[in-house]
Image (tube, rainbow over all chains, first blue to last red; front, top):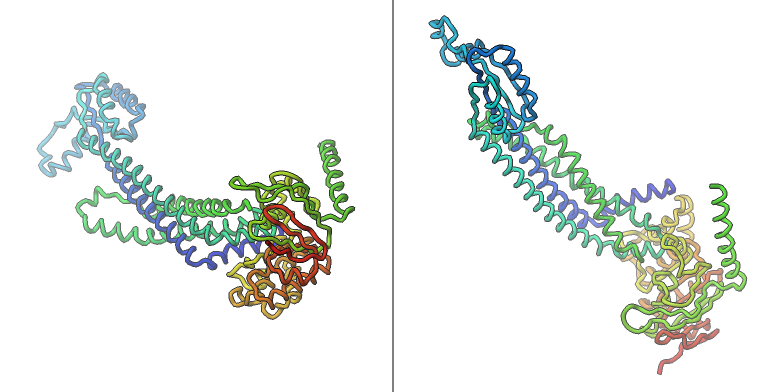
Length: 298
Length: 256
């Protein structure tokens, strides 16, 4: 292709945007609306997952040992536990540490009356899981290990979190499905309008002897630009909105602030930006190819 | 590799040359031999048509609606394929031409429609330049060719106007300029005066005649009895998909 033809094609793509202003606006609005919903939903789901994940990480299983157990056996047990795939983190708390933290947390100055460690048998492992739903399996295993006296756990927290996780997954799939159906409907409508606007022009181009590539190129460039603009608008909108909403929620529900661990706007946008722009440009690309293709067989 | 290239080169080249030579020898630019065209529904649109048109001819194609005129035009443009027979235009066997070769074939045919078919959102200059863009002419050539063709059709002063600011006659001149700017071998005009008053019709016909005198083969499909009778050119009359007459310096045959 000649350089002048290439520039002509690019210029045509740009000026097509302004030739059919209403069509352009309708297409941008459609893509914007779809991607706005997508972005909003993405931000909510990601934060929800983050909250659940943070809560999960706080759930631990505590293992106590038989009286008079050897230090080497404790170490062996520790190694066995850390080999388990569901274990993300294991932390040894010695009897002294347990007593120290108990003293500072509950006793304060009254602790001076004790000369011996009353928690001499309270050395333990705090085990953190990477998947809370595996808790009961781990507990069953731990109880079978020789040298383990007792396993403490919080069953309710674990089952609740597992339940929330499943719910979020189902709702995600459901909403993505609905969004997808709505997008396809809206976009196919826009494309249909596009066909009636373009039909004559494509026809004339073909009669004069334009190649399919030459006919298609300006439309494809136009479609991709529409997709790009349509994706950029909701991104900007969500970016501005995000911090405002987060601050409002944290202020309003300040008592829950330890539970509500929100992601920063950068964390959300590091993936949302490329995905949204990709979807926008992709929709524009496919939409214009499909629209023009129907009329190329002249 | 080298050998293969030579082989394929030696088998295809002579065939092409031969065809072109053949067409050049007998000066025939359009050849239809026993051409039939049937649509999937209803009666055949064309039945065993035989038509031979030489380079530089001026031919009227006349007939009522439903006579097969539009079908004939579409076959010549390779918008439709024939059902049966042989069709050759400018050395291209149109029943065998590949889809990707069609654009190149059409660049040698200028076409003018009854409804002008201009790009309404572009001005006169851009409408004509559009045809040159498609065949990838450089900006320099476009700046030279477009004004000169606009001068020929008498629209040099209106190059900035949009189609809706022009009269029907002027719009048809723009369409004509667009068809001619690429210097086509054949000019096909499908009812070019159908939407024009007599004065404008005559001016367009004069332009077509002038174009023909400069060497372009001109085919005009028309209903306009007055013009056909006055111009004394070759007239091919179609009726219900069959050529019923083909006369040098003919006239419009009255239907009874």
